[in-house]
Image (cartoon, rainbow, N blue to C red):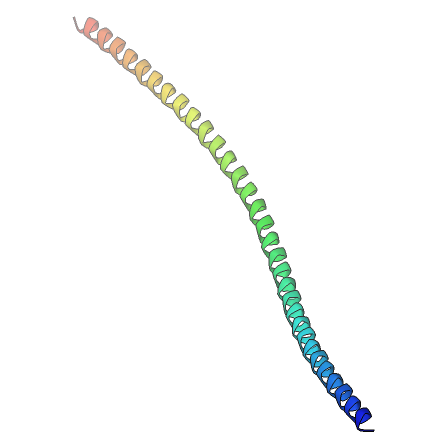
Length: 115
């Protein structure tokens, strides 16, 4: 009977040790599960942030394309305006030269008629 009691005590002690090991393992599993849930939550937040930043980047690309088109159009208008200004200056210079020639001719006529 003592031998059987000793065996039962040993068996009970082994069961208690295994129960403690199992309890520790369950605590570790619970801790790892909590960490995984936290990482999944962080991953979800990062995915949302990445999506938001991607949308903003897309909007900025569209705005950049519009600004580039506006800049190109403005540059073309400036170039056309400069050509028009140069043409007007040439016309002005030609008109001044023509008026100077007419004044010279009138001055010659006047000087010849005075003599």
